[in-house]
Amino acid sequence: MPCFVDGVWHHEGDTFPARDGCNKCTCGKGGVMSCTEIACATTTPSFEYKCQYGIKLLKEGESFIARNIQLCSNCTCQGDGRITCIEVPCPQNCIKDGREYYPGDVVKAADKCNECTCSNQGQWECTEKACVTDLPTSTVKDTGNPSAANSLHTTFRTVIMSSVLIVLSTLV
Image (cartoon, rainbow, N blue to C red):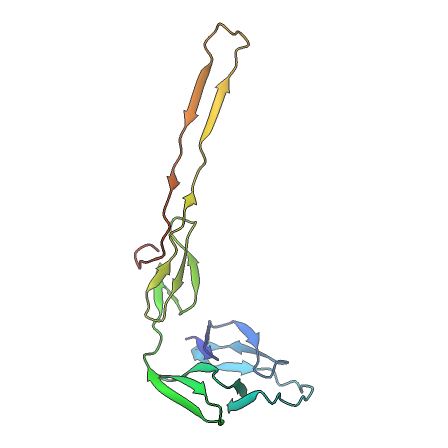
């Protein structure tokens, strides 16, 4: 089970900076987060921060997703220090080759050229850019005799062309 911290999904075993900026946290089994508890140098928070959510300081207008079991909320810091939240659907995970991916995870598409990103709706959003799988090549055999016919062998290889971003869960 992943850890969802400050709007970001972390896989089990991932290490990331703690909210205090000086400690490190690790996403453990069952989505349980553990952090080092080294004493940090104290600093005075900037006056531009208006809200506090747990130990996270927020600027006016800054938003985050708060998740509690199956309930998710999109929360925003208001100028008067209040945090207002609107219930939203929880992000859905994506599946590729039997493995679960979380919203924001990026994988290579089957063509090994494009990338697919797991969306909050559990769908893969894939780029479909021009991919050069092989370049055209030619081989010329020179016999040294101008009257002799030179053999020219040309191999045309595949060039995949496209230019739009599409949503395909089957591409990966």
